[in-house]
Image (cartoon, rainbow, N blue to C red; front, side, top):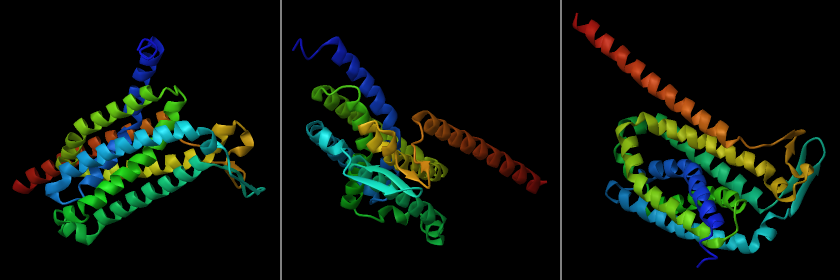
Length: 272
């Protein structure tokens, strides 16, 4: 027990919990938005089981990655079309590309639906547009995509399985506690649902950027960075991402307040 509860392991656990909390924001946002597509009576259960199953699978993914980290990080293909497409591809690249494209597709599809005439006329009925099983499956899948990034980041801090698994479980508990509150907030402030979808759109772009340097992170060879027409595909930093999210929220809050002020002035003038 003394070898397990060392100051180094406890310090790594605290750092990993913070990392999981930071990286888990976009995941929690997706869960809150996607769960609203399930039948209204089953939405809370969908969020609960979606998170529980996803956390369990994340722990399994962690164990597999620890065992196969060398094989997963080794590039298995290299583009050699000089001046057009160069760089290396590994398993991480494939996951990030697939996940990024899927998230961008989901965000664009939902934004288009919000703008459709059908959505304007039947917004409440759309709640049951997907079955509970479909929504849970999507939540688990996207959670695994998000977790791939966080697990890779966590492995850079420590390779002690119990430390990593504990951080993942604690982050899952935090999501269980916060998921209902975030969903309720979005329900009461529907304009933030659109904002959340645009944030997910940015997340998809971030994942595609991560794909460009996934192989380079493993091999530390600059030529393994994927380049298109000579320009490297590089990820957006987490600092830039969260700055963009904060700016979007501030703009939405100011715009909402300004719209209410204008509507109030118009109502006052109409009474005169």
